[in-house]
Image (cartoon, rainbow over all chains, first blue to last red; front, side, top):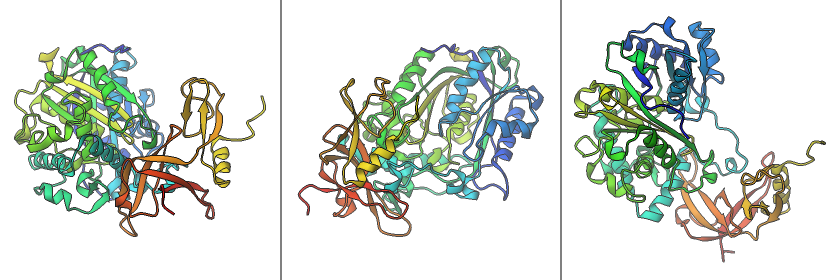
Length: 384
Length: 127
């Protein structure tokens, strides 16, 4: 069941806030506001036009309430659904529904995090789980490492193949002027880096940065009046299979299988119709699992599929062209940045890393420990 | 209706304190349920039966945490023969020697101060 209408809404503005390491005492709300200011400027709309706020951060328990206060928007439609890093892909679907139902006309989706500045523990305190916490898993890394161990066992995936994902992300990052990482990375350097949770070294794990941003969504009708090319929401899907890794139904199959199928169905597309991919790469195994579960290669083949630089700038399938959570930016909940990069690719704004003739993008968000999966398929005017 | 006299976690910990690994069984769905719950997620019924495991399982997945301070240690997911999975660690062997498919035996890590008891495992056949 999917009641949303293909192409009924569009992303018309997109911008990062400050990212990387932000000024002392900057707050998550400051970063949301900065992102909103820039995203509104990107599409030529004003703060007073905004009548829908969608937001999430781990650093404000009631983030929509805080953002309404900050922006003095007392009577807007709000939604602060939080399912981890994929919250923003879920917000796209919710915003599209709200736009279709005339609950709002200009929806902003915002995120902000200062986890690098305040420390990961303070930014995102772990809940006590009596069935896991006593064993001191280093979360989230250990959960993804358990999934990786199973993938290696069942399909012969190697640490070198995991490292290919990190190397491809780094090569893309070197083409992105605002990426955190600035130096080349080799497979050997990934393998010999500091161990975190076997089979992962620190180079298999996402960055720990500050950052935020916003996107602006309006109805397809309203989008036609705006200056820059609009990016249409063609398909959405989500699935939540578990919250803690010990309850994941199958460690080698994620809910991307369901969320992707729903998004393809709504978009009336299949994987061969997609020009550019943005996959939530919190850890190297993610990209492999999502390529499989979204149909780009058979289950178990992901490690071999990414080998030889296939998903890097010189490869045949462009994945995570901004450098990803592994090398560009990862403030804890990375999902908004996937959407920003997809919008820029579809508008042809990506400079040295621009994918030629990009008309469709698949954005896949991941939350928790492979828990909350949300897929959004975006397209240019030509795809409507 | 009177409030429940016990909680799922409370009953589980009481079993552990006696040296037993308990789980729930849904007789209607004919399936083991873990972690313990108030209702069966398959049927929606509150008719869940407590059972105790024989304590034998198989390593399903494994990792080794390398903390910045202190020694590396194991984290594993164990599939118990009764058909439920839990997080634990395998002790008595080097953490990197824990292998998927390894048969393991339950024992209790006793309560220490405020920390309740929890289940850990050793390779079967080990002393």
